[in-house]
Each structure stands twice: as structure tokens, then as C-alpha cells.
Amino acid sequence: MKQYIVDAFTDEIFSGNPAAVCVMDSWLGENLMMNIARENNFSETAFVVRAEEKYRLRWFTPGGEIDLCGHATLASAYVVMRFYDDADTVTFSTMSGDLTVMRHDDLYAMDFPAYDLKPVPVTENMTAAIGTEPVCAYIGRDLLCVLADEGGVRRCVPDMDKVKELDGLLLHITARGNGGADCVSRSFAPKLGVTEDPVCGSGHCHIVPYWAGVLGRNDITAYQASERGGWLYCVNDGGRVIISGKAALFSEGEIFAGRQC
Image (cartoon, rainbow, N blue to C red; front, side, top):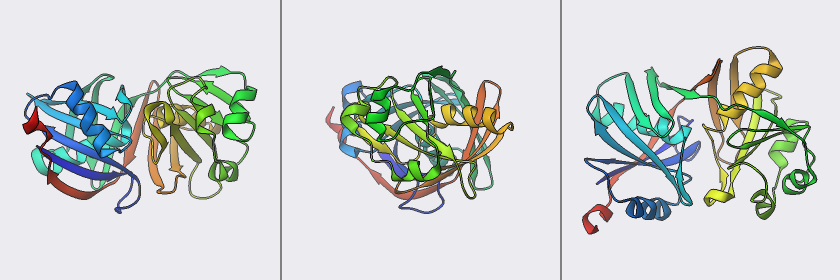
């Protein structure tokens, strides 16, 4: 079975967010896909199967299957368009509905659903987990905490045991950017077996609607300030978020787990 490792939201390897992409003729058993994801130990392993004019796509973290993942979708589109389908558009059928990715030169634009954000009170537990008191907080699928400045985002060393006790699947912290980015953020997913997600596309389905409202415009350039770092070029489009990014191929190989099932 072919497996590709792609660094997403970057044009250079060893930066952005790495994802494994497994391209299959038919589905493996869920336990086997889960074991492959654990063996890879990336924040996501994507599994892709062609289904007529579309592709079926599922995402697995080391802690379980997830409903939406941006960087692994970008990586999957990069692999499909480069190795399997000479087209500039690909549609994936997923747990979050059909997701279309369009290629424009070296950018891959993903059309994702936005999460409905609801304001929630800032709590002592949030402050204890993050290490500083958020300015405000919102809940969608994930918990979004807004910090006072970019430095607070970059310096943050969260307590992962306390992060696990917070509401939401992931924790995102964000602040207004000081330089080329409108906003900076970091994402943490200890509930899924991922300490820090280097560049989280689905997190920006929370982050972008928030900043679009604050800044009063829909075009948002976002930077994920993890150690690896990554850029996301986003458009808030009503109930959708268009997230564009680049990708770089790290490796192409074959894994043998499918022959053992």
C-alpha cells in the first residue's frame, strides 16, 4: 500500500504540519487503520479510496478518528493531484460532507464548514491550563481562547493534564499578529494523543470567523506559531471558510500492514 508523507501549509520540508496519506483500492479494517495512525504518530494519517468521480477520505489521529482535518486534506489533495488525477479540482467525501480542494499554481484552496462559535465565560481552569488569563473564550467543536498579545501565544507552555479537563476537543489560543499575519495561533490536542498540532486547518474554522468579525473583513492571513510554523491564507465566506496553503513532499514509500490483515 502506497504511503506519502507531506508537509502541509509550507513549501519547505521540515516545517508546516506533516501528514501521512495512504492511498488504497478499498478500505482496511478500522483497527488496522488505527494501528497505522499510531505507528506513524503524526497528528493525522489520512486514508483515501477512489469512489467514482470523488474520493472517500478519513482522518485518524493516534487517539482516534476525527471529523475534520485541514492539513491532512491539503496533503491528500496534493498527493491525488500529483500522482493519481491530473486535475485542478478534487472532491473528498468525508464525515463533514463533501470537501472540494482547488489548485491555483502552488496553492491548494480548501472549502470547509465554519464552526458556530458561542461565547463562554473565562474560567480559572482555562487560566491554569494556559498559564495566563484569556481575554475571552468561545466554544465550537474546540475551545478557542483569545490572548492579549502575540508574545503570550508564542511563549505559552500549557499544562496538558489541565488542558484535557477543558471543554472542547482541541484547545486553540490566538492573538492579533504583530507583523505579516493578521492573527497568530497555536493548537493543542492531548485528548487525541497529540500534544501540539503544528498547523491546524480545522482549528482555523474557529479562528478565522472570530478574527473576521473583530477585524471587520473576510480576508485573513494566519500564522500558526508552533515550532515548525505554517501559513494559512483564509477567506471567511458566511458559513464556510476557504483555507489555502502550500505543500511539500517529504517521502513516498510502501507500507506492508495491509498484507498482514
